[in-house]
Length: 225
Image (tube, rainbow, N blue to C red; front, side, top):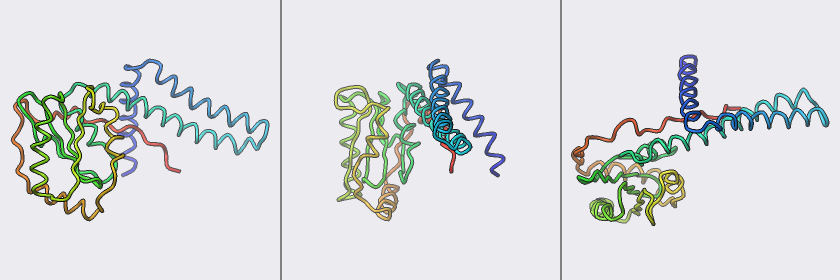
């Protein structure tokens, strides 16, 4: 099964590399330069301090890791640029978060295509809106009231995604959510998720469902040691 996964993984890396190179011509040279720089340092250490036979493999391994980390940063930056301005961009970012998060897209919305997504996790319930601050406030307020009736005592956070004052830029959304305090145990999160399923499903928005294209492709991971 691992043999079947490798071609797909390499294909994904090539696809992401093409996107990164198109968005920033200096990105890939910086990635390779960072990796070669690390390798060169270890080769010099091996020559002047030794042993060279140990430093070259160690430097090669660390060079690959550094290259993948730098490449991942460029890839993430490129993906955020592609998502900005699209309906459902915040959902695309939230849906790729690692950990025990349950993300439900477009639990509330209006005719202007402003939407509110719901995230359930250790902090409690997190409502994430997309749209101008002047319009999403009422959507967030109504959704908060609905949830508080069903999950009394559970902390409810609201985050507005956007470029206005008081809003969180799309590129900082994951970090904002990850920094929220852990108020619930894993068992309480599962119980809360079961209760949230009892809420009536919102009908499809006038413009249709969240487009699949907003999902962020997962970048390469450093090799396991």
